[in-house]
Length: 69
Image (cartoon, rainbow, N blue to C red):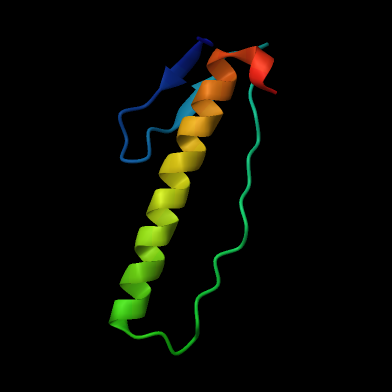
């Protein structure tokens, strides 16, 4: 577990302490049609939410086990 300041905000923002390790992750672009209706926007929102949760879990696992990267 790395040392950090974790804020109790909606996005669990954190600031790592100096000399901590971290990782950068990025996924594929999520395209939104300019003319998307409410149902399409909800599907895209859910896709984005699932992607962010998955990537957050992956990043946390990588920080807790340095052998994974």
